[in-house]
Amino acid sequence: MEFEQVVRYEFGDDVRDIDWNVTARKGEPYRKKFVEERELSLLLLVEDSPSLCFGSQGKTKRETVLEAAGFFGVLSADNRDRVAILHVYSGGYALYPPKRQPRGILRSLLQLLRSRPPEQWPLPDPEIPWKIVHSVLSKGGVLVWLGDFAGERKPSDWALLRSKYELVGVRVEDPWERRLPEIGVIDVFDPTSGEFLSLDTSSRSVRRRQEEWAREREERWRTLFPDPQARCVLSTDRPISSALAQFLLARMRRMHVA
Image (cartoon, rainbow, N blue to C red; front, side):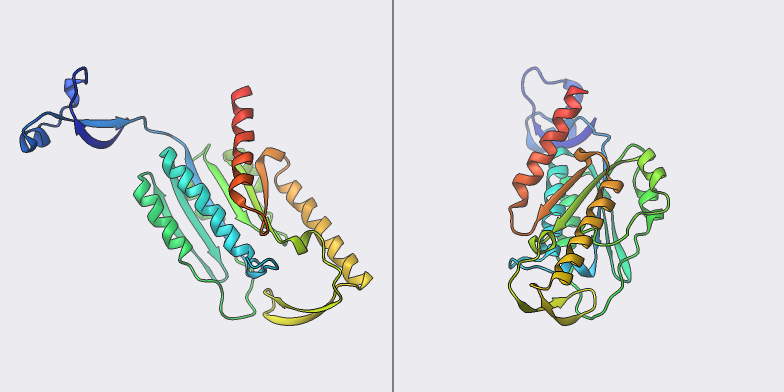
C-alpha cells in the first residue's frame, strides 16, 4: 500500500491509520489514506526525429507525437503507474526518471512538451540509447515507443527487448505519406535535409517511389510489432484521443478474455 493523503477519521475506519500528529494539531481525529500500490512500470520512448517536423495539414508529426505522449502520461498518472520518459533527439537525449506521484509525472510531461523543435539543418537521426532503456525499465514493464518510424530503426537486441518487456508502438504519419496528392509541381520543405525542394506530384516516377517507400515502411512496422494490438497508427489530420482510446480499449478487452 502507498500513502496518498491525510483525511478526516470517520466511524468504522481503522484506528491504526490515525495520524496522531495531525489529530493533535487539528483538534479532531485524522487518519492516513492509502491506495493500492501498482507494480506497472511504463517507459515513454519519444523518438524526436527531424522528419517529425513535416506536416501538410497545419499540424506537424512532432506536435502529434508530443500530444500522444501527453495522453499516455496523464492516463498513467491517473492510474498511479510508475512512469519514466526518454526523449531522444538529434545529438542527445533527456531522461526524466521514473515517477509514481501524479505531480512528478505531470512535471516530467511539462518539460517534454516545452522542448523545442530543431532550428538548424541538416541533422542526423537520433541514436536511441538502448542501455538506458534496460536500466530504467524493470522486467515485465511496458515500453511505449512513439515516432514516425520513417527509416530502419530495429535495434540489434530487439529479441531480448521483446522477451523482457511488453512493447507498444505508436506511429504518427501525415496523409501525404499514405498517398501523395496529385496537384502538380509544389515547393516543399524537407526536414531531413533542411532544404526546399520542387516536387512534381503528377510524375509517375515520383509517385511510384513514394508508394514503394510507404510499402517498405509498413513492412518494417509490422515486423517490429507483429501483434496488431501492440501497434497504433495516428494521423495528423485526425483527433488522436479517440484513436488511442479505441486502441487501449481493444487491449483491455483482450486482457480480460485472456
